[in-house]
Structures are given as structure tokens and as C-alpha cells.
Image (cartoon, rainbow, N blue to C red; front, side, top):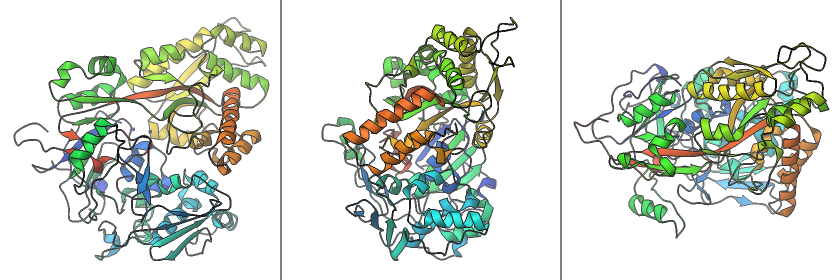
Length: 608
């Protein structure tokens, strides 16, 4: 959630310590013989402070710099939580309210000037501090609603006290729900049962440990100076253009290990080849920001990138016809992987917008008519080159609550029914200009935020035709993605297309898009319905089982009925890589994988 016609360039050489500002570093080519992963993000990063991030691209970078207690097995499918910096699995009380985790001694943060030349060990207090940062109002953390919902004993009250008093957040105030029992043991106490709290503990891209000294040393520049215990550190950064990560020279001895299923032939072959090697397997990661599909595709074909994340759909029929790598690419040692991802593409409607928002019958009818007027089959076939399946609900494949048998009005394309709904509720063309007006006779113009790239323009053309067919006028307001995100959080956009990826195996996470306490953050639509909030709260407390599945069904029905989001599709993703890249498997819903793949060095004299 990314940019620019910048092809893959070189990157900074390994440095003894980060420069004063990595963003101002002068990138140089990687030295011969290094193992370098090169690829492009299609949207620009927004920064590298986990507490202030929501976009997947920035979080992909931070997931390789910071480490949480747990992570996910690289090859296991279905996914399996495994220790990262923790010693074994957590100790959990019978009522799921007390979770105790012990971390491994002898883990150190990467060297940084903030530590004044001394090694800095990871300790329990670092995690206490990290979790408190989400509650600090000054950080305006998009993840706070998620953290708030965990109901750490005393943390929500401390935040409220800070907001009421307008005093700075005091990180030294003890919080009963976040305690360091000793140097290496952290205990979480929750006000209510949280059977799936392990997913919070495994959020490396979000809850990886941050050192207090680093935050205080860099102040409001902390987003430019990520310092963690992970396998990589930030080596160079040119904002919205290039990001370079290099091997963390002080990274502990950690060996490659994964446990694919016995009948997983591909996974077993990867494990046999890489098991026991020291992590990270590669020396550097060089990321360019290339918004447009064609330059990104060409950067891969001409050897400037050795990995292509998300093959642009414009080139699917050329590169992977029928889901298989084209023979001419196979001859070059290129291979592809195609999987159904754990995401959902949607267009949100601002429920506070005076035209399209609201809960009265005529407002719901307008959004339902718009939804019925969207030709999803054509969108998937033409704009997405068949690389998606229609979404029936917000729930995402491979997560709890998702039911492939669930069918809804959401995916129905029925312009006749859309017109009938609009007529019934007074959205008619009174002046004969071909466009419908509002029930009070005033103009009706939909305003959709968009991006200035080819893919967005293609989708906009489809929207234009769809809306014209039912008599609705729509205009598009282009801006860069980060600017649109900022405006969306502020409630300044009427509608905008976004995508959400699962952050864990529980489907409840995506339903936060509809949860009123998350309005303006994850809930960009600002949907606020007490009945839905009550379902969400019950889902949080219940263990998995039939009763919880029934609550999921009720939540899906509400989501489809009120239409705060037009749900489009769940996407297939095809990733491609050269013969040099070994051991890759697309993560299901986590971001960290760079350290688990190998990249054979390019022979001297050949193109990188």
C-alpha cells in the first residue's frame, strides 16, 4: 500500500554503522560475490517506525529489521507459529487472560550511535516499551485499535488519562497488563479472554522489539532510523525511490529450519537444500519503487531484478499462460509460482459523507445500487486478466470464518435491479441531462480517489462505464497512494479502492474494517453500527468452534447488507524469479521471508 519509474540501481556498500541519515546515503553497487535479492515495490514506503505504519510495503521492510516473540514457519502449510526470540511457546492461563513469554538471553540490537558504542542486549523491558508505544497518543498509531482490543490491564486507562490531562505519555508508569517479571520474562494480563493472542505475539512487522534509547535519540526522525534485532538493517534509503537492506553483522547464530508437511514435495526439497545454514542466507536486499507495470516487468526481464513480486496482470498471459511459466522463460531459468492470496480488494464508502454515507434506507439503497452496477466478472477478466475470484464477503480465504459456500448479493451484477432501486428511492433524472439527481433534486456526483498509474486508469474506465450504465455520474481525483491514505484516515475522501491482507489466521482481523472503535484507522469507511460491534466483541472472547462460526455468518450478512465497502475480489498472485533465487515460498499472511531464501551470486562479468 507504493511508486516511480525508477529501475533497479545499485545500493550502499556494507558500512560499519548506519550513517547519520540512511536516507541521505550515497548508494553504490554491491560488491562482487555478494548474495543480493533485487526487486521492486509497486507503491512507495511511508516510513519505518512500526508503531506508525499500516501499509504492507513499509511493514515488509520493518519485518526484517525488528523481531517479535514469534514468527511463522517458512514452509508449513497450514501456517504454524514458531519461536523467533522466545524460548518455546508461551505459558497460557486456562482462561486465556494471562500469557507469559520468556525470551532468549544473548540477543542484541544492531549497532547504532544511540547505544554510544556499547552492545545492547534485548530484554523484557524492550517489549513492554514497544507495546506501550501503540498507546501513546503522540504516535497516532494506526494499530492502536487492534492493541486496544487486546485489553491489556491498565493500558487503556493510562492512555485515557494522558488524553484527558493532555500531558506527555509516561513510559515509566507501571501497567499491570504489561510487565517484565525479570530480565528475560514478559507477562501480559488481559481484561478479557483472548484465545488468539498468539497472533499479536507473532506480529514481527508490528510488535517487533524497539529500544527506548533509539526512539529518544532520534525523536521525530525515528521513522528514518529503524534499529532492531533482526537479520537485516537499513543500509541506504532514497525516499519513494530505493531501499537497501544489508546483513546485520551482529545478528546471532540462527540456523535455517522449516517443517513442511511430509507430502509437500516442493517444501521437502527446499528444506533438504537449505536446512542448517546460518541466517540470513543473503547479504543484501535492494528494492526499487516502480509504480507502473511495464517498467517493473522490464526491470525483471533485463536482469535489473532477480525476483518479481506480483507479476503485473497485464503480462500474465505472456509470462504464465494457464498458470504455468512460459517455455521461453523456462529456458532462461525463470520460474513462477501462482497462489490465491489471503487478501480482499474493496472500494470503501465514507459513511460520514453527506452524499454516500448514512444508515437510512435511501442511503443504503444508493450504495447497494452502486454495488449491483459493478461488473465484477468483466473487472476480473479484463483488468485483472483472470487473476482473482469474486468476493462474497469481507472474510478472506484460508482464515477462520471464510466459507467458500457463502453466497451474497455482493458479487451480483444486475444493472436493471440497480436502476430499480435508484428509482424507488428517488434518485432519478429530473432535468433530462442523462444523470440522476438526489431525492431532493440536487446534483449527484460520485467522487472517487485514485492513483495516477495505468492500472488505476484501467479500473477507473470500468467504473465510469458501469456507473454511466445506471445513470450515475462519477469523477476521479488522482493523487499518490500515501497522500490518499492520509486523506482517507482524515475522513476527507468519499470513496477509494484499497486492499486488505490478513495479518493472521483468524478472520476476525479483517472485520476490524467494520468495527466502530477503528473508525479512521483500519475502518476507513467509518462504519459505526452497535449491532456489528456487539458481534465483533463476542467473536473476540469465544474460542474457535460452531458458536463462533455462526457469529461470523451474522457479521458477514450485516457487512453485505449495509455496504460500507464494495467488495471486489480475492486475488491470485504470480511471483517470478530467476534461477539464482532459491527457497522462496509466498508467505500466507506474514511479511518476513528475505532471510530464508538464497540468491546465488552472479558470475563476474555477467549482468546482475
